[in-house]
Amino acid sequence: MILSDKTIKAMLADKSLVLEPIEANQIQPASVDLRLGTHFLKVDEHEMEIIRMDDPIRYIDLDQEEIVIPPFSFLLATSMETMKLPPDVTAFVEGRSSIGRIGLFVENAGWVDPGFEGKLTLELYNANRLPIKLQAGRRVCQLVFARMDFPADTPYNGKYQGQNKAVGSRIFQDPDKQ
Image (cartoon, rainbow, N blue to C red; front, side, top):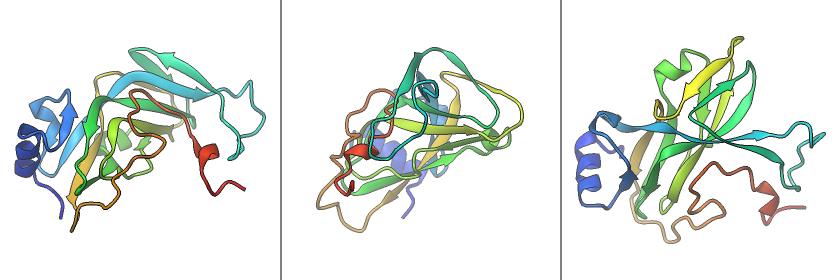
């Protein structure tokens, strides 16, 4: 079941759902808007000839209030908000329509597991032919919360738990690595 604004507000008030800092205008009828933080990661194309799934990826670390994403380029960013999901709630990361209409695709692999704690790393892609200038503090995506039929037996405690800035891919740490 998708959580309504009434339920989201109640959960934020009783701290069973944590999303901080948050302003009233971020709470929508069936979602909460997230704002862009100040930390970004860009793949360092000058230090790598190919991205391999079994090797760490080299990134350029940027901490700034504004950033320009060139056409057809990819960037990792962090949310301004820190979150903590209870073991019976999951969340979907969805782009905002106004952001999609300028050609910016925002994602977080689309899913946040119950029990996740930290800031979200957002994957940004500029599908436009023009550069897009982004500013920290602007609403860029939304979380849609859903209550599960039972609390998770094993809430999330993976390799991205507790992140407080944009974190690059850690796929090289996967146990199914060949």
